[in-house]
Length: 269
Ligand SMILES: NC(=O)c1ccc[n+]([C@@H]2O[C@H](COP(=O)([O-])OP(=O)(O)OC[C@H]3O[C@@H](n4cnc5c(N)ncnc54)[C@H](O)[C@@H]3O)[C@@H](O)[C@H]2O)c1
Image 1 (cartoon, protein in one colour):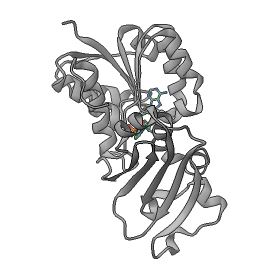
Image 2: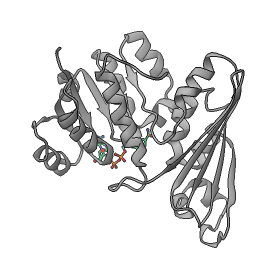
Image 3: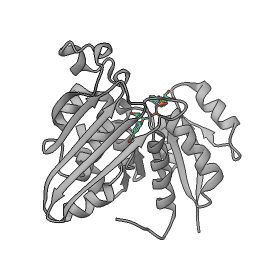
C-alpha cells in the first residue's frame, strides 16, 4: 500500500508531537514536509526525527502532501483549508474555532470532494453526540471548570470587572450559548467549536463556565438529552508539558485521528 504523504503546518506543542508520532508509529504515513513561521522550531524538530522531512513554505508543503495537518493558529487556518481545497488535498484542522467562524469552508470542502478531519480534542463524547444527532436532540450543555488563572485576560472577565484572585469557592462566571461563550472566552473556542459543529450548532449549544481555586485540572462536562435518552461525559484534563493551554488529551485525540485515517478498520461512530 502506498504511504499517505503528510505535511504539518505549525510545529509547536501539537504539531511537533504529531510529527514524532507519524515518524515513529504510523507505518502507513510518511511525514514529507514541515513548516513553521519560526525557523528554529522546524530545524529543531527535523533534527529529532528518524526520517528527516523537508522544511518548506506553506504553498510548497501543500503541493507535496496528500494530507495537510494544520496545528498553527486560527488566523492562518482559513487560508490553509482554502488552498487545500483548491489543490484537492485533505486537511486535518486543530484550530477548529476557525471552522466555526467560517462555516462556508464546510461547503467548499464538500463541493471539492476533499476530506476535512476535526479531532475531538479536549472533550469526550462526540461519538454519542453524532449518533444522537441522527435522531432528535433536545439539549446539549457544556460545563467547563478551570482554576481562576485559566480565565485571566478573557474579555468577559475584563468587561465585567471580575476579580479572579478574590474568588474563594466555586463560582458560576458565565451562562449562555456557545456563540456568546466563544466571544467572551476565546481560549475555550476549540472545545465550544468542535462540540457545536458535531451537535446542534453554536446558537443552540448551552455553555456554563465555572471557576474554583480548589481545582487543579480543566474539567469539561457534557450533558446531552434527546430522543435517545440522556448521557453525560466528563473529562478531567491535564495540560500538555509544553503548553499549559493545550490539554494533553487534545494531542492524543489528534494522534488517534491520524491513526484512524491510516487504518482500514474503523471502530466507533
Ligand atoms: N482542537 C482542539 O481541541 C485544540 C486543543 C488545543 C489547541 N488547539 C489549537 O491548535 C493550534 C495549535 O496549538 P498548540 O498548542 O500546538 O500551539 P503552539 O503555540 O504550541 O504551536 C503553534 C505553532 O504554530 C506556529 N505558527 C503560528 N502561525 C503560523 C503560520 N502562519 N504558519 C506556520 N506556523 C505558524 C507557531 O510558531 C508555533 O510553533 C492552536 O490554534 C490551538 O488553539 C486545538
